[in-house]
Length: 313
Length: 313
Image (tube, rainbow over all chains, first blue to last red; front, side, top):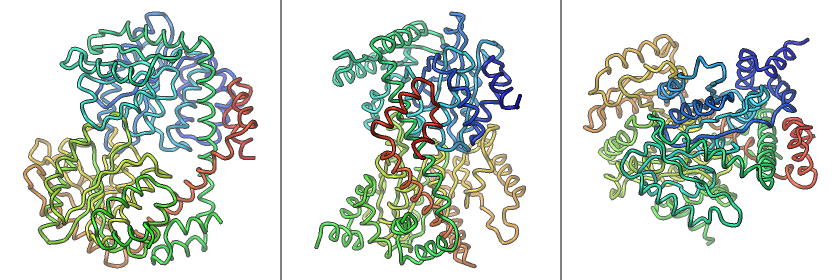
C-alpha cells in the first residue's frame, strides 16, 4: 500500500492524525492533494456544512463554540474549519478567537482546524471545499465553516455552505455603506448576537423590513429566521440550532438541496478552470520577448494592457 | 472630439470632474476604461506613490491626513486613493475613517478618492494601478495609496507603491502568528503610531532586532527607518516625511527605482495575462457538455478536478 493509500484509509477510518495530515496537504495544495481528495470524493456528500460569517468582533467564534456544544449534546460528531485571513497584520487577534474554541479541544468527537491558504492554486475559494471534503469523507456529519467577513473572498467562501449563518450585532446597519443586499443574498439564518445590548429591537426590525422588501419567503422561497443570541452566556443557542435544522429540512424538501449543490459545483468548476488557465500565464510571461515588452512598458512607449494583448496573441 | 477624448483632455488638464469621472470608469472596469488609461499612459511616471498599510485601527487614515497636510505645506498637490475592502460587513467603520480625511476636502490641491473594486477584471490588484495612473497623468506629484492590511490582496496592493509605509502600534508583534517576515519584505518605512502608549520601546526594539537579523541595510540594501508618531497630535509627521524623502532619494540613486518599477510592471503584466486567461473560463463552462459534467460531479461519479481536466482537454 502506498503512503497516499494509507493516508486515505486513515481519513475514511476517521483517524485524527490522518485527517490532520490530509488537511495539511490540502492547505499546501498541489497535485498530490488534488489526487488524494479525488479518491475521497465518492465518500463525500453526507455532511451538512454550516457557514458562519460576520464582521470582526461580532462573536462568531464564541457562537461557534456554543454550537459545537449543542451538536455534541445530540451525540453527533462535529468538525470546524476556521479560515484565517492571509494578512501579516491580524495574526494575534485571530489566535485569540481560536483560543475560545479550545473548550472542546479534548473532546474526541470534535475536530477543529484553522487554515490559512497561501499556497493553494485559486486560493481560499478552492482550498476550503477541498478541506471540507476531507472532513466529510471521514464521516463527520456536521461541519462548521467559519470565516471573518472581511474581504469579498472570505464572505463568498462562507456562502458555499449548505446553511449560511450571518452574525450581526445590535446597531449593525447604521453605517450607510453596509451592503444589506449583499448580505441578504447569502444569509439563510440571521443571528443578532450580543442581544443584551441596546438597539437589538431596532436591528431586528431593520432586518425584518429588509427581508419583507426583498420578498423573502414568497413563492416558496426560504425566509431567513432572525435569532437573537448572547453567545457569551449561551442564550439563544437552542433557537439557532432549531433554525439550522429547519433550514436543513427545507433544503431536503422539493429538491432545494440538489439544485443548490449543483449550482455550487458549477461555480467551483468555473473557478477551477479559471485558476488552471490563469496558472498558464507564467509560461507566457518569461524569456527575451517578455523582457523586451517590460522594457517598452517601462519606457512608456507601450501600455500594460496592450503588452498583455501581445503576450496573448 | 469624442467624449473619451474630452475626458482624457480633462484629466491631463487636472480637471477635478474629469478625474472623478475617469476614476469611476476605472472602478467599473471594462474595455472603455482600459482604452482610456492606455491613452493616458505616456503621460504617467512622474508621481511618487506612497503606500500606507497596517492593521485595522492602527491609525492609517489619521496618519494619511497628517501627511496630506505636510505635503501641502511644501505647496505640492497630493492625491489619495483609499481602497475599501469589498465586504458587506465593514462599511460603517471604513466610512468613519474616511471622514477623518475630510479636513482637506475643500483644499483644491488635495484629491481624495475611496474605491471599492467589485467589477474590475482581476479585482483590486489590477484596478489600483490603473486608478493611480489617472491621478499621475493629471500631474499630481504625490500619491498616497491607503489599504487596510486585512486580506493578502490588500497588503500586496500597498506593496506596489514606490515607498511602502507599514503602520503598527505599540504591542504589535506580541501575537505569535504575526508574520514579521512578510511585513519586512514590503516595508520601506516603519511607523509605530500611538507612540504615547506603553510598549513603544519594546516594539521599536523588536523591529530593530528583526531588521538586524534580516540583514537590512547590508550590501547597499535599504534599511527601513522606524518612525514614532502620535498621528492624532501630529507628532512625528516631519520625521515620517523626511524618511519618505530619504527613501525616494535612495530609489533615485543607482537605478533602484528603475529596477523596482520594471519588476512591478512584470508582475502586473503576469496578473493581466492571468486575469484575461481566467476570463475565458466562462466560455468553456456552458452548454450541455458542461451540464452533464456538473451532473456527474453531483452524483459523485466524477470529482471536480477531473471534470475541470475534461473541460480543459
